[in-house]
Each structure stands twice: as structure tokens, then as C-alpha cells.
Amino acid sequence: MRLLALLFVLMLPACSEALDIEPTKCSYSDESVVSQVTKGGEIIRYDSTRESAEDGDERVLREHLTLANGDEISMVQSYCYVYGYDLKYHLSGEKSATSLVKILPTLDDLISKSYASEYLTEPLSEIVLESLTIQQKMLKMPFTQGLPNRYTSTSEFVGYFIEYKPLEKDKKFSAEIRVHIDVGGLD
Image (cartoon, rainbow, N blue to C red):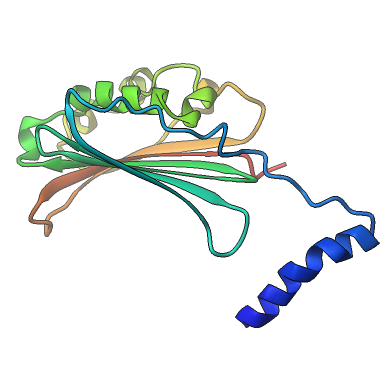
């Protein structure tokens, strides 16, 4: 099967020339999707890698941060024809002492330094604080909250949500907060 896929990929440029079809170029590039994370301060460890997906033109920028308080954050930006941003914030220690309101400035800062910020008209914290209940803001219960599309700054399709879930069986982290943003893909 891989051999067949390889042959198809090798023949595609010749076929597109014969049909006078220009191959579609990626809408998002390495030059536009860059890391602007500031190392130091609260961030005690930072790693990043950029890689190509095995099955196409899609590229992936992976970043991992360890904070001084023991929390860890992973961010994955995937891009080519569509753009995807996935941030996972892992809470260490007791979740009862933490509220989403305390974490939102860190999320705002990280999102503002990503290509995803181009598609939000307000900081995530303002959108989230308006959309969630008090119980959700205090991380008293799991939730997944789609966010209103009136906060997007483009005519392209933008979908995004925030999710919180306790990690009952994880020994290192007590909970995970996830922010996901997708751009493009629907015409």
C-alpha cells in the first residue's frame, strides 16, 4: 500500500502538468506559523520541534513548557491547507486550589504568541469569562464549552472550544484544560 502511495505521489506532478493543473499550495507556511514563546520567568523548561506529517504536506510545530509551579503545557500547531491549534494545560497538585481565572492570563499570553491569535477579536480570557458558569470557572466540574463565533476576525471558518477534565488516575497531574482552534477547511 505504501508503495502504491509513493508511486502516486511521484506521478502527481507529471499528471498535473499533463492536465495543465497547478498543484495547490499550502495556505499556511513555516514563515507564518512560528513560535514566539518567551523563555525564562515562570517557564523553567521549553522544547520545540517542527516536523512534516508522514502522509502529506501538513506541517506540525510542537512546543512543550514546564512551569515553575510544576504545571506543564503542550501546544501543537498543525498547518498547510487548514490551521489547527491545540493547547493542553496540565495542572499539577490539587485542583481545588486553582481556578480557571488564575490560569487564563497564561493561556492568553501563549495564544497571543501563536498564529491562532490572528483569528480572535478578544483575548481568550474575556471570551471564556463571559461564556462559563461560576462552577466551571472554579474548576468544580468537567465541561466542554464551544465558544461564540462572534469573536472571530475572519470570514474563514473558525471553530474553537475550551474543555476541562479531572485526571483521576494520573499520578502527576490532577486535571487538564484544553483549548482548540481550527481555521479553514470549509468553503
